[in-house]
Amino acid sequence: MTNARSLPHVFVPDNVENEAAYIAAAQARIMANRAKGAHARWIAESGEEVVTLCCDFLCENGEFAPAEVRDADGWTVLHVTHPLVKASLGEFFGKMFESLRDWGRLTAGQEKAVIGMIERAKQRVADREVAKQAKRDSAKHVGTIGERRDFALSIKFVTSFETQFGTTFVHVMEDADANVVVYKGSKLLGEKGTDIELKATIKEHGMRDGVAQTIITRPKQM
Image (tube, rainbow, N blue to C red; front, top):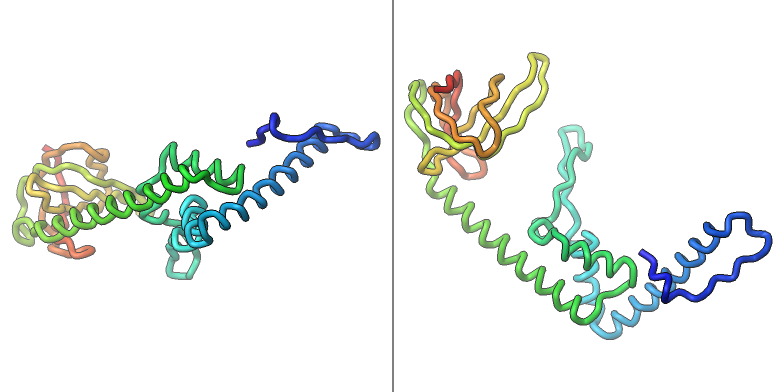
């Protein structure tokens, strides 16, 4: 984003064929040099530690870089946003990033706001972990293996993938007591947020990330 009002007039030589491109390139160089100087002044004012913290956070570098998820062959298949960045994404985060990108620095007020945003994100992430731990502690296995019974469930997550036998759907659901029930098979039971009633057979009692899970099979919606 170029602030043309603050840029000096660009002299265009007579031999330049594309005047607009020449001016745009010249303005970009001017902005880059200004940003470089502004960044150096910012470090002198606030210290390199604070500047690095703000830059790494807004640009998702260093300690705030996305985590790589690799497959069995070592290929990167997914980049997972850092939890603190994910907890802060929004219009304000975008505006602070644009300010840093365009001007090479943040104002004192913006710097304070970004540091505050990081601290609030830390608290939100910590609160979520407490909630997850409480869920891990409270979730129990439902019924007995081999039992066919009725379930009243809420779908919390659903995804699908293709196999040689067709589409397989994975549903992660919860009952009224927040016990986790999982179905993996060829039937789509509903979308995320849907409440359903079904009859199914308990196939297995398992654990995932410390949370008790009841695995079901042969679901029949009621």
